[in-house]
Length: 78
Length: 415
Image 1 (cartoon, rainbow over the protein chains, first blue to last red):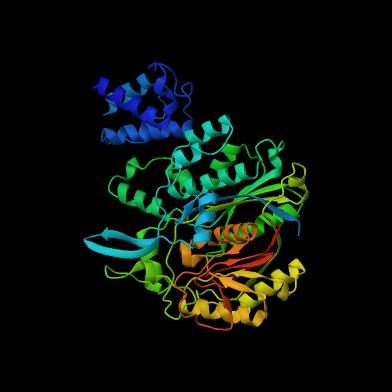
Image 2: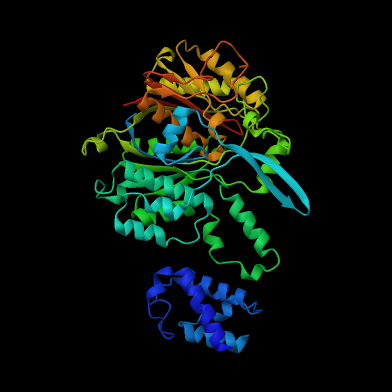
């Protein structure tokens, strides 16, 4: 499950910041370091939850700083 | 007044970019078709002057922009169709004015965007898409729905740090934007103002609303759309919407001289009046007042005007009222056409694209034909009908009138 979530997050992140296309994406880089502003991070969470058809609210995930953290929280909260 | 127009940008149904639009005006081209919607099992058909073949990234990539600016444009996400049309026009005009190296202090540059509720198609698409899953609505919606999204986006791309806002006056929004730009320059606060009129992108609701009101010409599967739109012709039956966007770069007169830029022309003056009437119906007195004020402001006599770029929407009462106002102005030499007859009615962008059309005609020394003007409603006007006119055009009056009794007129002088 986590693998699937991570790959969806990555796809969405590339859609939001296409410049990351040729970068080595570390799962532990912070979104800020990857160039995502707060609005981009909100988009990323919403797009990911939509793809997973999650019932969770976006606000539960605003604390996630990295791909790993976000993926873990999504897997945990469903 | 002391305002020079140094850069132009345009997207219209008959040409994308200033060069193609100029050629199309000379040829008197048109591009009308029909747009179909389906809602709850019911089909809706409307006429449209449609713009095809505009690819934002491809079009922007062809502009001679600095690499840094180009990178910032191409990184932009979530630009609505309306905003992307406006952005292209603004960048084309910025390049055309050769401002890239000329503006050292970007706090002396302002941005004015013309029109309100210009992104209706985009908003409607969001309502439909998220109607049953609203919790997934993208956070960006709360940024993008503002009409000023184009202002912020453009300021980021070009590093503009002066002031920015949107100004609206229904179908006179384009002219009001230009007037606002002139006021900002005349105040001495800004050397340069980018006046952008993004596409007014209609949703099914606006098409249906205008049609229900009787303002938009009706079409069904049997309608020959090439013959439908006929401003000032006896068989006129309402307006046909056209997808246009435009930009004019305005500068204080001394500013472009420093870099030996002559510019297309000058905005000599403007006139505005209201009819004290909330409704869509026009007023001869109000239109006359706006034109008179524009001439007074320009210190010009009526017999010095060569050409009127009419509001000319093809509305029965609107056309009649404007002709009466023109005749009352007593301008013996004046030639008259309707740019809308070729490109359709751009609504909030109409005044801006028609000012662009006026400047291009003056620069190139021609006046375009009016489409479908077979039997004019009045003989006392020198209509430009089937053939274009070639010769000097020194002074133009460009009219734009909006619902709610808003009348505006610009005087443009050739440089």
